[in-house]
Length: 254
Image (cartoon, rainbow, N blue to C red; front, side):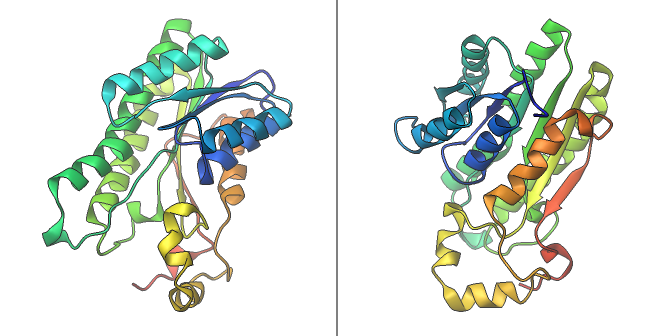
């Protein structure tokens, strides 16, 4: 097991990609802190799967869109697990609206969760590592839309574009501390956030024609790469974004 003895925090890990990553890291040997807005529902299912994998799991409720809760999340995960080695910034939201119709409340929600939350959770995690004088891993779950336009989702694209540059900037700044920072950019993954798409079969068929591998991705496709980036096998990799999209980014037409 590549992550034996490691401790990981995965934000937004109640379901979807976050759950798949939590379970995969546990199967690789890591103890896992599971975060969600509500840890009484889906998060408990993630916890059960982590425990079935034979690892320790803990639940930590927090809204990372609020900086103080983001910091408290890291502190509580450290308290319960005895420390952290791996951070996966997975929590994310999106709101659909034409640019001219975007409301300030929706702008704030998307940017607060997707970008501000990532920033302050990572800051607290890095402070912990530096205080302990230990290396660590930061893995940001971005999107193909950090590069690809997505009309109707300008706030989402803005947040993921910001995450792309934050990943690169922190890789340079934190490299001397032995902390690697990388991103994973999923494409069309079959998760709850894509429910409207999944329920529109004609739209799905059009999308599949644009994916060279001919299928939508699974959360486990992302989780496998996250496990690699969290491991010693990725010790000399930092500042990079890896696309998990079946080739969609190079064959996309809105």
